[in-house]
Figure 1 (cartoon, rainbow, N blue to C red):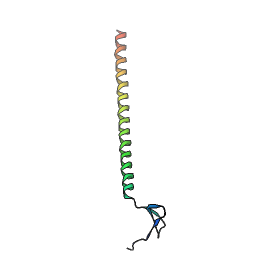
Figure 2 (figure 1 turned 90 degrees about the vertical axis):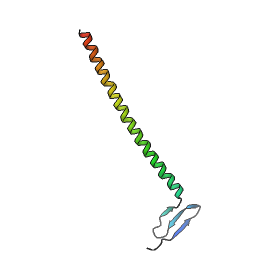
Figure 3 (figure 1 turned 180 degrees about the vertical axis):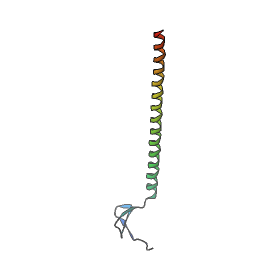
Figure 4 (figure 1 turned 135 degrees about the vertical axis):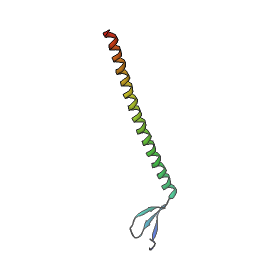
Length: 80
């Protein structure tokens, strides 16, 4: 396979233009790795938020169930 020729982009040391496709390529691997880590962290945070949201909804459902049971118990005492 032939190697593709790349030309440095003026005033952007981490960018190169692929002569064959005219695509601009970022050669800064540290910046790329930082973006990947940030995205992974954001996905992790979103997952945690969704999990906590589900737990809160479950606790609120339990709270409502307890309130309903207490109301039924109070109604039985009033009827007696």
